[in-house]
Image 1: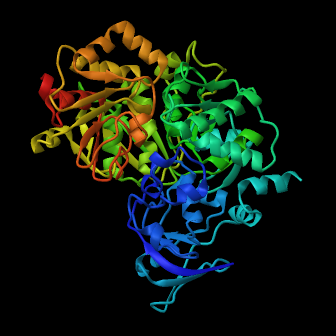
Image 2 (image 1 turned 135 degrees about the vertical axis):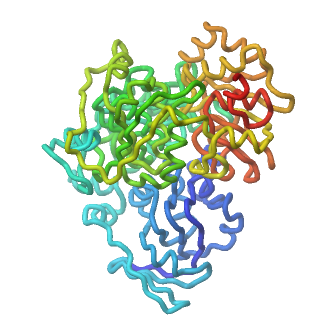
Image 3 (image 1 turned 180 degrees about the horizontal axis):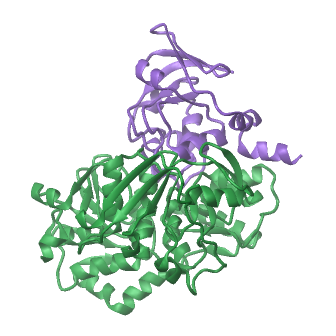
Amino acid sequence: MNAKGFVHKYPDNVDTDVIIPARYLNSQNAKELAAHCMEDIDAEFIQKVRPGDIMVGGWNFGCGSSREHAPLVIKTSGISCVIAKSFARIFYRNAINIGLPILECEAASDGIAAGDEVSIDFDTGVITNMTKGEHYQAQPFPPFIQTIIAAGGLLPSIRQKGE
Amino acid sequence: MTMTQKILAAHAGLAAVCPGQLINAKLDIVLGNDITTPVAINEFEKAGFTSVYDRTRINIVLDHFVPNKDIKSAQQSKQCREFASKYDILNFYDVGKMGIEHALLPEQGIVTAGDCIIGADSHTCTYGAVGAFSTGVGSTDMAAGMATGMAWFKVPEAIKVTLTGKLPKYVAGKDVILHLIGEIGVDGALYRSLEFTGPGVASLSMDDRLCICNMAIEAGAKNGIFPVDGVTRAYLEGRSQRPYTVYEADPDAEYCRELAIDLSSLSSTVAYPHLPENTHTAREAEAEGIAIQQVVIGSCTNGRLEDMQAAWEILKGRTIAKGVRGIIIPGTMAVYKECLRRGYLEAFIDAGCIVSTPTCGPCLGGYMGILAEGERCVSTTNRNFVGRMGHTGSEVYLASPAVAAASAVTGRITDPASLVG
């Protein structure tokens, strides 16, 4: 599995309130919610994002609320992967559970600038910055989590085990 | 093993666990609210589940947008109601019975010592105060928990926080946790458990401990936890709906970091926008003369009886400053009723505040106190992120009920010690 796209870059401690403000959480409709993705940190994001684009953050990406709507709107907006130095633990869990690819990589977060074109090889964890001609190695997921991802999320993996 | 590791090992059916180990653990309690439960119901049904693992262990609390603020939130509440009815969920809390989930569940004795708990709400870490392992998850985890009674966890490393001394007057649990977050940062405990211990623990009330554990997530922690002592036993006595188990950290438990806090050295603390780690003493804030337009006293962090009492002690016989809106939200119906009985509500209203039915409301910018551009609020809630309580150009300063009440009176951020003396 691979991803390729242009980068939308954000600072440390991007919280779930700016990813999807709570004032919109009276809806569960992914498309309706995605229209407000990143609204309080980058009002133009939803106009700029193209399918396959990549989001890059710093430390503690996705901190705050447990709202699963956060990884869901990022995925629905067309983002193919989020790269960060670290993820807040509930966001990390939710992203895996709903099938939004995420990668922890400090060097990539430091090396990649907004607008860079980046490709990702999920099998090897190699992130390539095509604009700068640089490569970064991300941490691979533990096998247990790879099984969840391969099944298409937590619930399908539970159903598979039960059968 | 640490206290957290022992609870996890017991619930995974293992003699021992070590940090980093991935385990499947049995759940005593699964929780969701009116924002996260609808998403969990959709996932539960999409996956084809047709039964819940135990209708007595699932808790659905409508608290974020109830009494419903608009048609869409009413639809979400209706969906929760129908699911609760279909599966005969024992602990379904609707308007009239509901409270803010993390104030309500301990009060009702639903969560107890030794439990392993997940909740689709990040502040589920609150229940560590009664000696449980309790952590926030998303809606899909809630759906899986409702169906199977199990959840996967990575066993966390632990940070040991040794408390000594006793809190000075007007200084409370909120100041302890804000001080700690200021020390270690908003990701200072990322993926780890925050384990409180030491001789200072005994001096902290259950309401203080619930407040401290509530904001463990604001340091990135997986959970916060207090040992079970006389205060815990007295709290659980006649309240806990199930027999409980006491787990203690081994004397040789390993911690990745150790911190010490002398409670007697702390003073009232304020977290400036836009991160809970931006802490200053209330005295410093007072010197800056920071004018405010709103005060919120309530939430799962500070909506308990002692919080209402702290606010009442400052507001009684005083009036809030012109140009300040004072919003007081008791956390549960029982807290509300006790405030009524004690005359707190009358004192709040006489001071110029309004008193709301329990709701998360303004904490997450839902309703009942949304800020306009350029407005500032001193709030006893837990997050001060950009746009958290309203316009992205508004500001939230996090503080204790005593600081919030004193600030309401003066119209500027104020140390209660300097107001009351």
